[in-house]
Figure 1: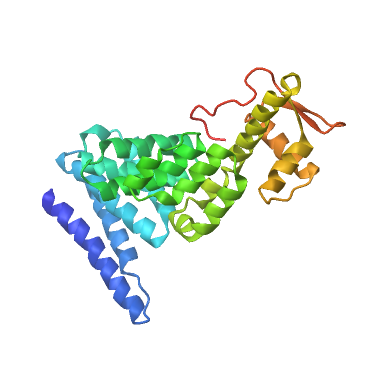
Figure 2: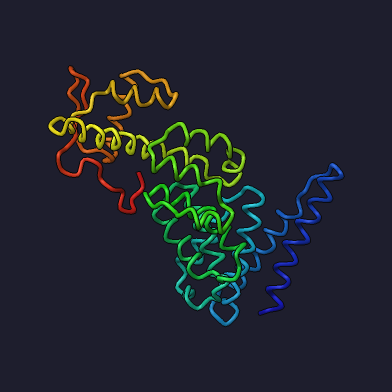
Length: 295
């Protein structure tokens, strides 16, 4: 089986090298695609009953690497179905290293599909079972797991970001804590290329709703200190002014739309008094926690 692993790996690596040379010479780089077709046949041979099927997951992981490199991740689905629905596969029988790689790539696929709860499960599995000495692999996993965790309301500690050189997320985390929309947008602008390349930009962009929730919560806390009796009544003008202080211009109607979205998404419990342009917060748990659920 070790020989098969070596052959599958070498086929991919040689094809990648050949494509680089073809591209340099202005020719069509089609060797990696051909390698994928060949390894798919190998997978079909291995995916039968018998001792050889234990190598199927390794070949699957090589296919994932090819499909991600080529940008044809949709082709992963047929392989995943074969692994996850076939009765002759018991996932726990596969080598740990292969299971970690498999969960990493399938977790990334779930991120792209915005299935954050499933992505969280898969990437967390990969992280928990990854070799703790392999910091580069841990970093690769965290690069996708952190945005997923942020989307379900779990904020990483700065020490984690520092340890794995993932400080591009530091200002995003700070923005969520402060309710600072300006800081979030600045962080996304500053690291836009990096986030786009990773495929997590849209995930991070959707964190704006959580930032708005935090901003309203801060206004509520300040108002509770000044006027306890009216703490649950927040004038939309106050939100407009807070945003203006953050150098973000919005009118009352725009803010009302955002507040309506927060209520709809259950990030805020309350209702509008439209005539007076006031957000009336529930007196019980006005700012529900995500509790591991995506917005």
